[in-house]
Length: 185
Image (cartoon, rainbow, N blue to C red; front, side, top):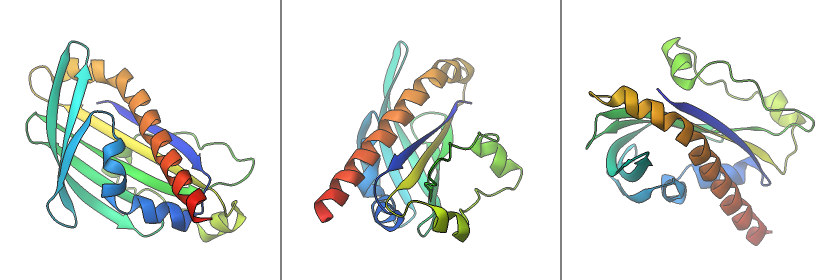
């Protein structure tokens, strides 16, 4: 099951980044292949994403459920295919941008951490105090698993495609947030 993580440093304070991230309507349309979305209630929505994997191209609808909104820290969601046998999950995580620090090594996939019962760790108050107050690390994680008879083949082809999708999505979020922050100044 393909999984990807990408980190961008956004030149805006955490509170400003969170104000953007906390509303799915601000960012869902930056996903590659986005067609439309429909909000059902505070935690549930349906996304229509057009996927182009190898010789296969189709629009897939996903039921998306917000698993957690932790103010100023993270938003996590799960996805379940409506039109296709697929599922997955993702997260937008805010963390301190500490000068001179490199991105942490990946310690296992998001799903592995969930299965082990480990929550995504919140950044400590000390880490935020030592961080650059005018920038925020924004991490985007995404895992998708295709099921059914051709699921293994789709997963194999989808794996290499997810990284550029995550990079593009995170870069678009960064650019939009920084644009809005510059207008506010």
